[in-house]
Length: 452
Image (cartoon, rainbow, N blue to C red; front, side):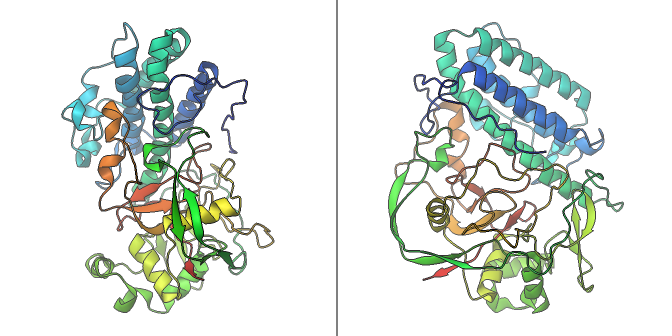
């Protein structure tokens, strides 16, 4: 499946008055374009769920993951609760009890079902969740078509936020399914028809060092260029020292060398908390790797178990593993600002990254690629050495959406770039993903940096 994102032309966009959700957004999409985007994004969620049985969709494999059924219902709850109930006249909720079941973390909206117990929700059924989605989708279509000017101005920004929110959950759906299926002794494939690209020879594209002169740079989202989350704003200037950044992410073959050199047995390479996790959880490799004693180890993927491609970017790493590898390699992780400045300086594109439902696993960069920086967009999220903090002058979204990002700005680390399971039309150079440093079920890898 290739990118299906819709790019609105200047004639398809209209600049509408700012709503409380517009602290970082650019020109508002027209009703027609927003309706098409709604149909496209919501349809992809159905496509992603189709390979799964009803049983697959109900199970929660760990507290950090959520069942597919919950993802489908929660993204629908978001539109119902933040768009239809406050803005659509005469809207009737599908089932008022769902407000408790499918709220995620919005404290202002009242109590909610405990996150670690989402896998206990055998009811409502998957079929009923789909009826819920159809009910809300029909109401959204009517609202987009018929809402008066004032209601539209208040709600349009929230609809766009909801679409990007659903895309985040589409990525989480796949990463959660990968973890779920990996725990099954049958080792079932999410999509058995997956035809992953042939394993590359050696390390794929050679690694080069790309220099950045440093100096004053501007980072963050430019409000004149479309949607962004509040945590990407405001755009601001800062000073960077000269640095070099690797031309591609670290590969599986390179990471295997780290393992075979005793990387998981050498405490001098690790951050203190990371070494404690190595000992407590018996880490010895990325979580889906096996048969490390073989010449070519194996990895469990969404397409079942495969031989590791030595040239593909390594993924499912925690920050701790990424930092330990960088220490072993005589380098370091880039800061998020170095990463963004390098992406801007070398024209990294974020509008057409690879998204292929038959190859939902990181792929090696072409050995003859000419771009200075390869795979900045897609394949794996790249850990940075930056804590997830507010930018100078940060203002969270207004109202209920204020809880979307800002309250998580403690104890988390920023990742940049995007992954092979990030949906089309969702990425940009300023995008700030974030996870706790020990998280290792996402498609997260690393790119090296060093002082110049």
